[in-house]
Structure formats: C-alpha cells, structure tokens
Image: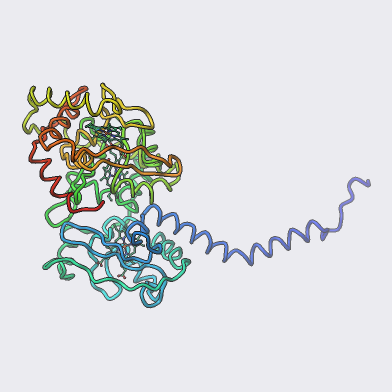
Length: 417
Ligand code: HEC
Ligand code: HEC
Ligand code: HEC
C-alpha cells in the first residue's frame, strides 16, 4: 500500500516546473525576437549585405563603399539604424520595398547595383528578419556620398525602364519535382547570394542575359567563370564536394578563389552552414550549361604551343607540375580548372599579369600566392604560355592573342585591387 502513496500534487518538483514554465512564458517574446534577429543575421550573411555596405576599414554596414558598374560607381549607403543618416526612421514597408523591389524611401528607384532583382526571391518575412537584425546594431552616424554615375545613368527615372526590361518582383517558388536540398540551393543562388550578379552575362544596359544563366561574365577587370555543370567551361570535372569545399574555404584540389570571389567567400560563403554550401553545390551540378562545342575561334597553332610549352616548363611547372595537376592545398591544378579554359580569358590573363593571393578563411587561414609575370613576360609570351595551359592535358580552348593581353594590361594598370 505504501508504494501506491503519491505526494500531494503541489510538490517541490511541480512548483519548480510551474515557475520555470512561467518564466519561459514571460521570456518567449524576447526569445522570439532573438530568433528573428539570428535569422536575419544569417540571411544577411547569405546576402552579403555587409560586403557592399561597409567601406574598406569602415564601420560595418555604415556604407561609403563605391560599387563599380559598367556605367560608373555608385556608393552603397549607410544601413545602420541611425535615425538621420541610416535607415532607423524607415518603416518596415519602406525597407521591404527597397530590398525586394528597388524602391528607395522617397519612392525613387534604386540602381540595380543593389541586387534587389535577386533579393526579390526572398519573402517579406525574410526581409523583416534582416531588418530586425540591422535594427539590433549600433547606429552609426555617417552621411551618404554623392553618386558618380555619368549622364544619362544618373537619371533615376530611367530605372523604371530598366525595371520593365529586366526586373520582375517574384518570390521563390519551390519546384516540387526536385529535392528540398536542390530547392534550397536554387533559392540561395538566385536569391540572397545573388551569384548571377557576377556569373550571368549582362546586356549593354546591365540586365541579365537569362539565356546564358550562370555561364560566365566579364566584370570590371575580372571574368567570373561559367559555374554550370558544363564539362568544357564549367564545373563538369568538379564533384559536389569540390564545389562545397571551395565555397567553404576558398580552395579545393582544382582552384582557388581570388579577387571579387575571394571577397564573396570571406564575407559570405565561408560563413554559410555546411548544409547550405552543399545545397548550392547540388544545384549548380544539376545545370547543364551551354552546348559543349567550342566557340571555334582562332585555333592555337603548333609553334605557339611549342613556345608556350617552353615557358611553362621554365616558369610554371615548379609549382603547377609538368602535367598541370598542381599540389593539393598549395598550388591549384591547371588541368582541371574551368577558369583556365574559360571562353573569356580576362581572369587568367589578369592573374598572370598581376599575380594573385586567394581567400583566407578560418578553415584555411594562410593561402599561397601566385607570382606576377607582368614585368617578366611580354604580351606575346603571356598569350603563348596561356594558350599552352588552355590547350594541353586534353583541353581545347579558343586562342588568346597578344592584343588580348595588351587590353587587360591597360584595363588593370590603373586599378589598385
Ligand atoms: C552588390 C552590392 C550590394 C549588396 C550585396 C547589397 N547592397 Fe544595398 N545597396 C547597394 C547600393 C550600391 C545601394 C545604393 C543604390 C542607389 O543609390 O540607387 C544600395 C541601397 C540599399 C538600400 C537603400 C538605402 C538608402 O538609403 O536609400 C537599402 C535599405 C539596402 N541597400 C539594404 C541592403 C541589404 C539589407 C542588403 C543585404 C540583404 C544589401 N543592401 C546588399 C549595394 C548593395
Ligand atoms: C562579386 C562577384 C561574384 C559573386 C557575387 C560570386 N562570384 Fe563566383 N567568382 C567570381 C569571380 C571573379 C571568379 C573568378 C576568380 C577566381 O577563380 O579566382 C569566381 C569564381 C567562382 C568559382 C570557381 C570557378 C572555377 O572554375 O575556378 C565558383 C565555383 C564560384 N565562383 C561560385 C560562385 C557561387 C556559388 C556564388 C554565389 C554563392 C558566387 N560565385 C558569387 C565573382 C563572383
Ligand atoms: C611559386 C609558385 C607558382 C608559380 C611559379 C606559378 N604559379 Fe600559378 N599559382 C600559384 C598559386 C599559389 C596559385 C593560386 C593563387 C590564388 O588563387 O590565390 C596559382 C594560380 C594560378 C592560376 C589560376 C588557377 C585557378 O583555377 O584558380 C593560373 C592560371 C596559373 N596559376 C598559371 C600559372 C602560370 C601560367 C605560371 C607560369 C608562367 C604560374 N602559374 C606560375 C603558384 C604558382
């Protein structure tokens, strides 16, 4: 009988549990707010808001960084919650309209250097989470600089025309025939991470050439390679794990991220969850890309190959290997690199002229550097050695002419980065 005895219902344990439940209830609004801010913080990493809205050496999100476009540079404004110089006084609706539709607080159009045409894939809830996160930051007082776009692009009204041509407000709709992972990847690539802003070729007015989605584009002084699964110019020889590792660390057995991509890795992709970098990889590997035949421009002749091969053995093979395979974690493979074989050779030429130091991330803090050959080799020799690496070890790519090197030399001469 004793064993069936039960303590009175309000025992210590019960009281304690009621107290905890009450305080949890009282704290739940804070808890929700905290979760919302965390969600917004992560979305702002996916979107790399800080990358553009922070001046070099400046306070985070306080603006002042000029963003280059084909038409001139546009300064990214202060988006801290400062009431006068930031966005502290904006309503949620105004913030949402700026982020997802490119409408500024006074109704004027924003320039698409702010990637609202990608952010439109996010939901209003996503936008409000980002807002909650930005509102949790310290306000910074820093007013905006005047923009420097030349006429006629300094006329904001023209952006209404641009929007008609190139913009459609559209939230991401999952494709039910695909896996949740694939859908997550596509959402991140097309939405917050705006990969197409750099990797999709643009029209003369800076709109996306949607028929060449993610097939590689020329930026100011850089080319962003094809990141579809195309075997010749894209990521065909990369496994999904290679792609995820590159996004996470800035390096893998095939390539290393430099320039604008090193920034994207440092600020954004290296801080994504492993599940998200893998989702991006899964999605990119599903894209067929362009038809496989080479664009058949001038072919590389035997004598160029011989001259290039001699320079390669002399100057390059010590690090990249006679077979172009490189050394894992130190020197990237040239035989597997899509960037090397890219139809648009701007980035490889530039790397040879200027050298490169790739992304440094927590996972791989010190990165090896690629020496610069701009002084050592003339334009003809640089074209020759590149033609050699672009047409050896089973690859075939359009020939680079000495004048292509001259052009990139001129384009990059006046630039510090
Ligand atoms: C690729 C660079 C880039 C990225 C990434 C970017 N922005 Fe911007 N943003 C800009 C530029 C440039 C402008 C100014 C556009 C203009 O003046 O028309 C701008 C304008 C804005 C404005 C309007 C502010 C004002 O005072 O008019 C807001 C709000 C804003 N961005 C928020 C964000 C948020 C939030 C993110 C991340 C989700 C983000 N931006 C990511 C470049 C960027
Ligand atoms: C600000 C412009 C920019 C953005 C945004 C950007 N990239 Fe890049 N990306 C580049 C440039 C430029 C290169 C070439 C530089 C290099 O290979 O070192 C590159 C290289 C790459 C490569 C290596 C390809 C190869 O063959 O070596 C991959 C993979 C890649 N990007 C994926 C992405 C993904 C995925 C996103 C979106 C999450 C993204 N990039 C966003 C500019 C950008
Ligand atoms: C001292 C070692 C060293 C030498 C010599 C060297 N490289 Fe590199 N190279 C590197 C490193 C390290 C990288 C990766 C740099 C980065 O992205 O930060 C690299 C990157 C490259 C890339 C870009 C590959 C990719 O997909 O990202 C190309 C192309 C390249 N080198 C070509 C050459 C050529 C051609 C020569 C000879 C003229 C040469 N390299 C000589 C170390 C070297």
